[in-house]
Image 1: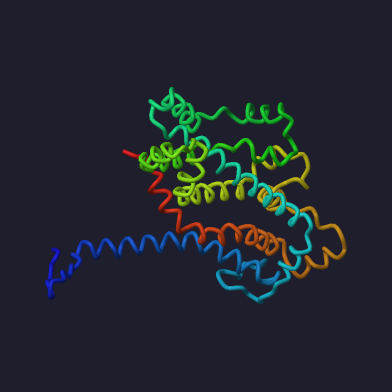
Image 2: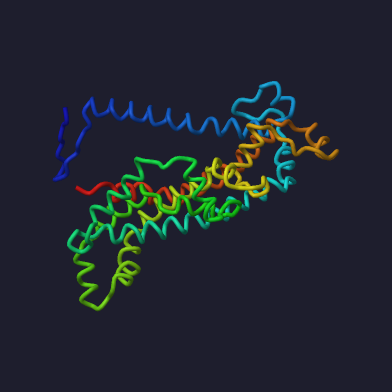
Amino acid sequence: MIQNKKKKGAVTVRESVGSRIFTIVNTFILVFLALICILPLINILAVSLSSNAAATAGLVKLVPVEFTLKSYEYVAKRAAFWKSLGVTVIRCLLGVSLNVLMCVLTAYPLSKDNSKLRMRTGYTWFFFITMLINAGLIPWYMTIKSVHLLGTIWALVLPGAVPVFSVVLMLNFFRAIPEELEEAAFMDGANHWNILARIYIPLSKASIATICLFALVYHWNSWFDGIILMNKPTQYPLQSYLQTIIIQGDTSVNSTTDWQTMALVSDRTVKCAQIFLSTLPIVAAYPFLQRYFVKGMVMGSVKG
């Protein structure tokens, strides 16, 4: 039962018992889910900072055992790791920029009414169907091969240039912008390019930040296309490189110095160090975009 208590014109609202129980249960569930996400990362960090013997014996849980930085020193000397990291950084810069550009240019005309854009409903359904129906792996590969993109950075960027889900978010965000702003701009002599650049894009920072986060996570975590489309292991992005050394095993330890270093660390600690370093940038970027994420998702939801 909700009780109202008046004090000199102010109203104090007390939560009911059911509301308190819901808050406690909801908090417990959220904390539990957060721990499920965080604890594996903490374990990986702890293993990477532990000694060879402790990691091999399985003694490491959430706290490093026999603390050492030898694994990170070994990773820092690996040219293949840093080269694959550079490929991923270039891919993310090109991919995120292209995704945002294509989403904005696609969503702007689709946000107009049928009276302003003929066949708007047909165009919208065309994009929507691509979310439900996939052409398949073989046509995807043959198309990229036919345009001579195999072995180039564009093979990793262009196939996902128009993420339809992000287009839908941006489209509905644009539709929430008052039409009076556009009409006033037209009266002042502005064209569609001016309106898009000076009105729609500045008002859509939250939605654009959300799209950037989605695109960044997609390009950073993709590994399958790198293995299929790149001709040489030296062209692999970071996640494809990690996939090959973790699943298929690391065969790059050849020199005497490498074997001496591996005697101080273990294959498991080195893998954990590389995994943690690969996840660190995306984890660090999220807090800066999180303030826009919820607003972008809510404002870009389906408009009634």
